[in-house]
Length: 272
Picture 1 (tube, rainbow, N blue to C red):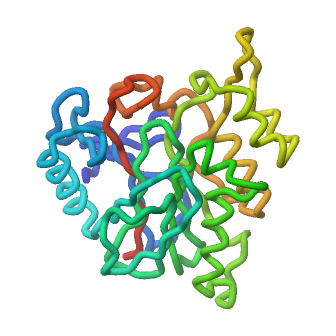
Picture 2: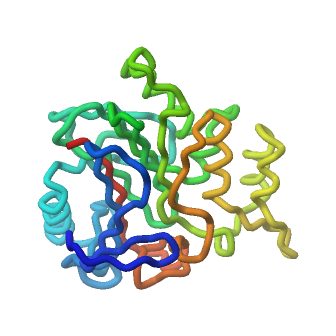
C-alpha cells in the first residue's frame, strides 16, 4: 500500500490514496481507510468506488474490491447498510450483503468493513487486540432509539464475544473515527437535533442554529460524546476539523451530500 506517506491534519495518506489510521492499535491489528483515488471506475464514481449499489459498472466495482482485498491480504466483508443498529459477527464464511450497520470479529482472515460517503465510520479494537469492529454512524444509526444506537450496540457486541471475561472493559477499547461530513457542511432539520438532545441535553453543544431555522450538526462530536458516555475515552482520528470533511475535500473523498451521485469509500479493520 506504499511506504511513503504525507500528513494532512492528522490524516496519513499513502501514495496510492490509502489512509492509514494513526491510533495505538496493538501489533496484531491493522486498519485502513480508502479514498476515491487508485481505482478503475469512471466519473462520477472516479475512481476507487467500492459501492455496488450506487449505479457504477459492476465490473469496475468488482475490480476495485479485488484490488482492496489484494492490498489488505484478507477479505473485506461488505455489508448492506440500512442506517440501523444491527451488529453482525463475522467469520470466514460470512458473505457480502448481509443487512447490518456494524460488524465485529475475533477471527483472522476477514476485515470488518464499512462503506461511507458522508456518514461516519468508526473502527474499534482493544489494547490486547482480542477483537476488532467497525460501525456505520450516520445520524439515524448514531441516535438510535432511547439513547441506544449503533455505537452502543457495537460496544455490547464486545461483551457477547465473552471478552469481558478476558479482562476487557470500556477503558481497554480504542476507537478511531474516520472522515465524514463536517460541522460546516452538515445542515439538518430540528428533528435531528431533537433526536439527540432528547437523550442527552449536552448534545445541544454539537449543533449551531442557522437563520433559516435549520441547524449545523457536528456528527463526529456527537459520536465522541456517545463513546465517552460508554466509558470509551481512547478516541482518535476525526476531530471535526476541515481535513476530515468529506464534502470539503472533493479530490480525496466521495460525498453524497456534495455530488448526489457518488461512489463509496471504506474503512476496514482486521486481525493478523
